[in-house]
Length: 108
Image (tube, rainbow, N blue to C red):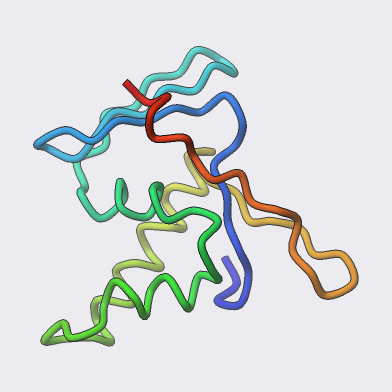
């Protein structure tokens, strides 16, 4: 995933935070994922709020090992992308498509 790109959660994907991380349900294919990462759930909540680099900077700001944290964020995003839980938005004329920001009230 490119650092200057935006990412989104595909329509039909719902998620809910839990103590262990969270649960992701994808209507397409009726897939249920148990995500054992609070960071991954935070990244899902932040989908569409900025570029990958901006979101990584926001999360890692002030962390003792800021660069290592950014690398961990990128690795987590790549894994979510491989699982089909997030996708990189296509660019047209230098502007990203509007991101689907998850409606947290919908995610029970």
